[in-house]
Amino acid sequence: MPWESMAEVSRAICKLWYRRLLTAGKEFIQKHLEILDEMEDNRGTERDKRWLRNYLRRIEKLSEKGPDSPSPPEVMALSLWLFQLTGQMGVLAGIGPDGVKWCGNPPDEPEAAIPEWMDKDSTVKLLTLCAYALNVQFLPRKTDTAMLR
Image (cartoon, rainbow, N blue to C red; front, side, top):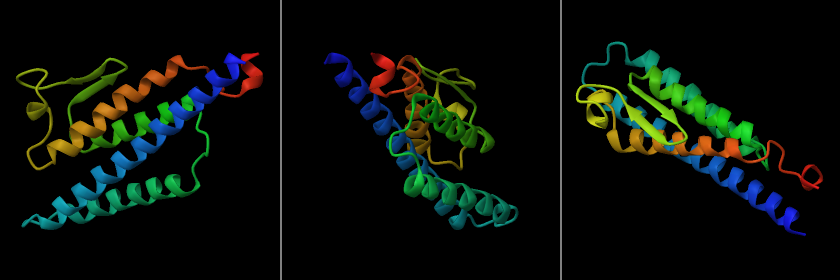
């Protein structure tokens, strides 16, 4: 039955996005922990490192014990949670299903929206994944086959 295959595709899409977001979030945090460790002026970085380690523990816990088959709202929640993390670190950007909108002068330039001390590549990668993961909102809320019959 075609509906069963559609449910399987929806589950696979959600699982893919969830795993990719967790991986990108983990890479982002690890990269920024390394940057904070290398800073010459350690004033104020201990609190930031503690905060990032807490986020890293949460991501690792989600990787281990997270849902086997995440629903679209769970994928969107993870996406927005990771977006909020970058915002707390000083990135000036907005996200939507059509991509990342960079704020700064000049507009639409990641370099103007990301603070100098931050890793630009991991930040752009994470925010791009967060933005496009929001497209799961167009999938059925529940991905079980009973709902689609």
